[in-house]
Length: 226
Ligand code: SAH
Image 1 (cartoon, rainbow, N blue to C red):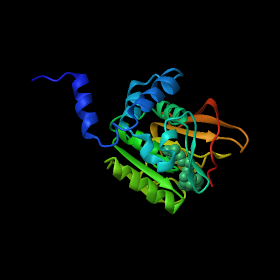
Image 2: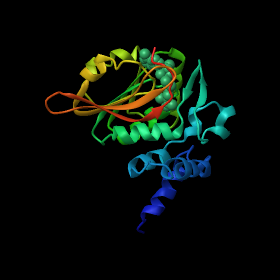
Image 3: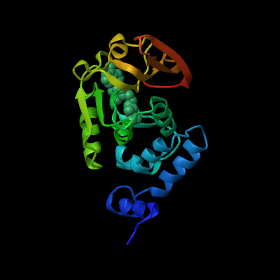
Image 4: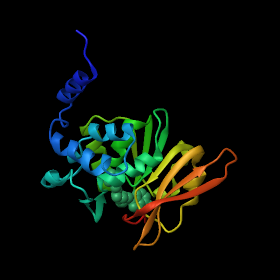
């Protein structure tokens, strides 16, 4: 018997315990919040279909997990809006062999998306309860290529540098120097920059001569990097 691509999807969905739950809201989210806007990267869209977002929020919020906004994850922190996670991932553009650094693991949802698109994800969280939660959530859905460390993300992860991609999920007025130092040549850093009231999503790249370039992508709203 020869299976076509569509059959493989059915097989895959039936063996993954969380993907058959909330599958319609998840497809609707991808269609209406991502594709209908400017998320055109097929690999990013596919990663969103492979990560059950409801696993990353409290059970009482499961029905809202696929709605078009951020949600509380405790300790004054939030899981970012699906569109923002998608936009940052699309700008970062991780490749299958890349090593990625993430600052601000939160509940681990963005880490899971990055894990589907790259070889290794190193994620830093400053709150122990959220570090533990993200590890628990990632294990639940069988993701094993993410390492989460309890530390100050502004210092980066020097032992694992350089990184082809660095994604920061909290805003800062100034881009921490260790992060640009730990960016590989040809690497991409995506970070919200600005004061509390209004931030810009900035893409920082490092060219072959080690020169840093900044490009503003859009306006955004994040919790602070502290
Ligand atoms: N990536 C998450 C969003 C997390 S919100 C998602 O998938 O939706 C931002 C996170 O950054 C919070 O969990 C917060 O505790 C963490 N954070 C803030 N400052 C930090 C710092 N200096 N180092 C590491 N984590 C930090």
